[in-house]
Length: 464
Image (cartoon, rainbow, N blue to C red; front, side):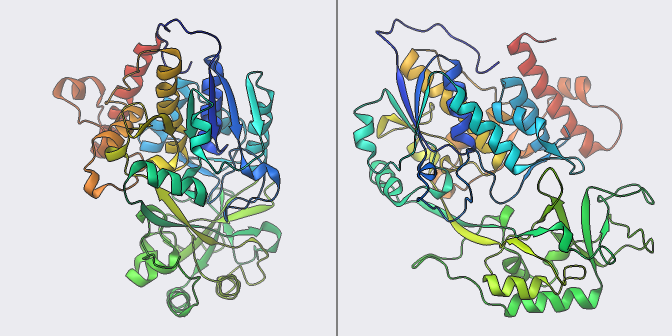
């Protein structure tokens, strides 16, 4: 469906827009602009075979980096609501994720390679899109050529782009460090020790969507001690260790508190080992990462341990004694701009109205949030080049509340944000009577917020 249409003003000849970066946001943005009949030129440096950003492994578009999960599909969760809204907006990427999904309990996880392959082919097939395998080093040159330039470089913007954006905004960049989890070969796991189960699955139910490595209390504390004593990769010179709370390295969690991992990625509650029907004191979960289930991701195990330390310490986890690491965890610097201070309502820089941003660099955090931001930018770009009225994303929806956060937050304390129900306006009394059903109060209130949002969008799109 896309963003609701408006009436374009008279334009003299075709318009052309430049999109820099074909990650999640860039790929979605190209597709949405193409649907509007706008000619798009895409610059993707990774296609030239020499450019490396320290996180991506392939040259394909929309490559997923730190996880293959797009989080929960349930409507009583904020990620589930945001994805359902994106389906209503006609998201190319969420549609592809649905088609390339793999088992992950209630979450939407995808086969990385198939997901990226499908999207890469789709972009190359669009008739009004041209792809250029080059790194952009001068935004000013592009601003003189195109009707609009969109920076979708993500949090790993190149030094050249970062320097120009910093100059244009006239403001210091904010930053946090992000880390990615290791991948292991499924065949190297010891299934005599590990067991398959989904958290809070039915006791005795055969199998599950996760492989679980159980730890005793003694094994857990020994593992934490190894983390605390391990060698870590250095930070960038002059930077402090500022981590995004939703993606903290496991060793940083252990440093905060030796028990913190028990309430995070190593919690054992909700799991039952079918070998003895016991609940483990602690557990490490691994999630399927590709369609043929030969690769698994260590859930929540983002880290900046050195590669040698990862191999040594993670092999002390029961069931991973002979683990074959297909990718080690690593750490990279995520850069984002102070959106409420430097961006206009159309996602363009106040200092340069022809320059737009999209993706995590604009201050959203997470895969689906990056996809959502492409719709904000597509709306702003179409307003500039086609004269369409700016669409007002309703604040009672996930899409609208997230955009409102970018615009209305306190710029002196701005931090990247994932979608959460705290961003939505509370239900009024009439809405409570209409949407809230009996049952778990917290669960039903969140489900009611989701129903309100979906109903609002269906009315806008003319759906029953």
